[in-house]
Image (cartoon, rainbow, N blue to C red):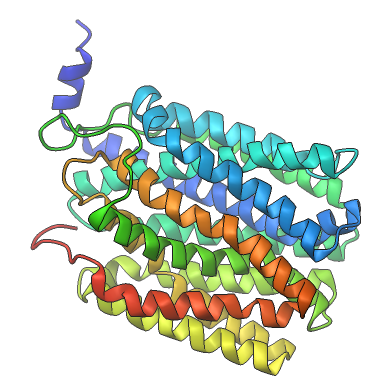
Length: 398
């Protein structure tokens, strides 16, 4: 006899099911990272293909960020209604299609709506796999989120490094996007089948399963996510262009800088669960954000290639604890489902991606990209200051 949905929710998953879901979620986090790294490495390709200046390029990035934020108002409801597994598969496929076509549009007028869809798919994918990760951490009774986010960074490093190698080999950017996105789409569709079929309801069973308007503690955490995502967004969207345009590196070498940043984030996050289990999360955030702010300031002041590589590594290590700690802290807010809590704070955080592109594009147009990237220094400094407001996990809680 087939168990009902309620019975399925009441039965804890087996060890084999949890292990399979954990590996599937790792692959999906890596898939999102590969796509992000590929996009970051090819922003100069988009700029060149459509003949964009910094201000117009910022509109393209703004379109993606707008789609991401708007979809978050429905992400919690969609994940709650259809399940993280189905949403992750569909969002990953949509994301791959939009990125593969990024250089194929006749002009900016058609590129902008495509970027809206691209951003919407990215945020749905993000919420789905973070919801799965939070559920796995709860069921395992130990920290796993940093490890999962490390796989995102491994993916970012891999995507950027592969693009750097292909650019050095003179492979056409169009072919790169088609090949990478096709491979990732297949991998994501296969991996999503290993995710949990159902998620447990929050305490009381009546918690919100849709978007929760940020207020109180959720608002505080959302603002900190905003600062962290603004800092990370600067690196994802502008680091390759900065190295190419301001430092004078070829695009293939500039893409390596992105890979170094992602590698540092990954290595730090692989050790993040160990650190989270032993040290206060507030301290980890404060120290990491301070390191990121100081390192980026040194990079911008020196404008030297080797300093940029070393600085990007330290920025990555410093920003690594931000997402795992803040996303999981949001799920501890009572009366809100995991998907709703993550969508709530992420909606504010993704606003950083909305504000960041036009802000940096405007500053760069008025001055230069070096001055504009000082936004990262400010965002990281604010994050370090605000770390004191992060609620510590209760005793025995992962």
